[in-house]
Image 1 (spheres, rainbow, N blue to C red):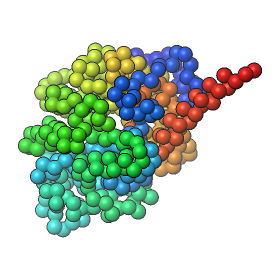
Image 2: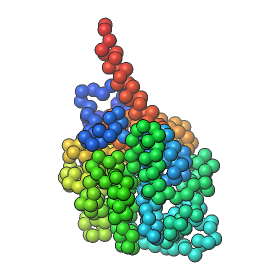
Image 3: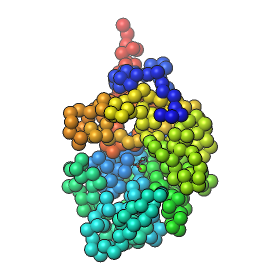
Image 4: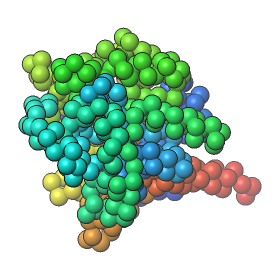
Amino acid sequence: MSGLVALPVSVAALAASTLVAPGPAEAAPHVSGAVAARHPAAHPLVIAHRGASGYRPEHTLAAYQLAIDMGADYIEPDLVSTRDHVLVARHENEISGTTDVATRPEFADRRRTKVVDGVSIAGWFTEDFTLAELKRLRAKERIPDLRRHNTLYDGRYQVPTLQEVIDLARRAGTQRHRTVGVYPETKHPTYFRSIGLPLEEPLVRTLRRNGLAHRRAPVFVQSFEVGNLRRLNRMIDVPLVQLVDATGAPYDLRAAGDPRTYADLVTRRGLAGISRYADGVGPAKAWIVPRDAAGRLLAPTSLVRDAHAAGLLVHTWTFRNENTFLPLDFRRGTDPAAYGDAFAEYELFFSLGVDGVFSDQADTAVAARGERAGSRVAVGQAVGAPG
Ligand code: G3P
Ligand code: CA
């Protein structure tokens, strides 16, 4: 990928390194002091992507609860705004793909066509509903053909607020005597500011109200845009993560006529720029291990090493067990919904030194991390054993 240096390491060799202790050349885990203090045993972090979205409709309290039960370190709510300016957890502000809104006669006249981030979209939008109205809807599985089991839970859960997600994390953490972090993402921040419903102010207010507005709080705030992270960096002292999409450019830069793309952000110069306002970078996996046109893995890039050299954590996305999402190298059989060798993919990225993984199946990520830690202990014991 442009701007990055391909490392002279074969992917096959990296993938085959499962259960092998790291050699002296392997990058040491890069964990900021604050993160290490909060999660002494958790590296890389397991971030439950939209909750346990591999097993429950995404962005529901049931999905977040299950992810915590599975051992996730952080739960991830994507955030959009309601008409009365309450932050709720949805991946898009258009909600027909993840709720039953289209089947509700009382909301038929709310259907609109809008331009969001330069794209025309038809449907039902959170900013046209009060929180009370949104609460009448029920969540449904986004990809029912692939995740049929999850449709069992369609119609059972509400759209949660950010406050409800924080409450759940705190309650579950207290019950389990461990920290459960929250990893909110601001979705379409330029768009929401343009319609008078900015995301940053209510986000900061909510974090402050919950005692989470400080450096050591178990919180990362993430965004695909640059400008709102810079704004947040001036407003609040929590760790920030610059997301880097696989293609294209941050919408706020594009809207301002700034020619920089995501590829520019992950050059060494771009990473140095990010380190001035953020603590980490959240690249799509392909920026770390690209794939060819057929979906086969290519040699890893230097991104993890470059980001660490710039003082940035690396939290990459998205890990999913199903064949259709895995590289060709790790698929098993031809059923797109069947599980492939997800462990091999985790091991590959762990071996490259990432600091966190966003996963739809937190249990698999936790197990993969545990196997790696276990193999280190086992090899260490063997080496240390008297001959
Ligand atoms: O936030 C990390 C990852 O979730 C970004 O992708 O589209 O799933 O929000 P998306
Ligand atoms: Ca996200």
